[in-house]
View 1: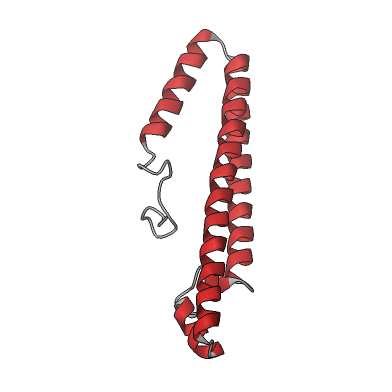
View 2: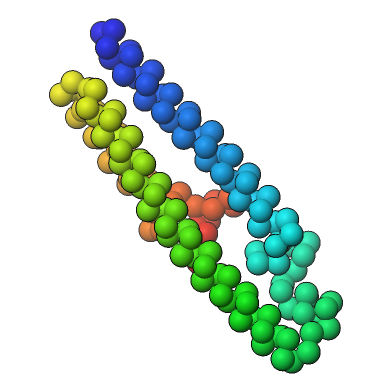
Length: 138
């Protein structure tokens, strides 16, 4: 009974640490992309990148370059997200393996069921949705 409580405490601690890292990561991500480079992901206040084109009074040649720069940045960001998701998946798998290794057979079955339930709650993108409850746009 004591090991069951200890396993539950470790599981809760891992989940809480994961939540903390998630919140910190979201904060840093928003700070980075809503700060100086906010035009990549325009907020309601900033508007569309076309407003920046108008404000800067870019020439036709500059507009072509500007759009190419934004498109290149978006491709790099998308690739970075894919790489980050792969790293996070590897960390999650390692964490789950370490947790499973410390459990007895009965606990492993329950833990595997817990993981299946968590997986079934994910949407088609592998996420539960964006900040507004909808799946993020790609």
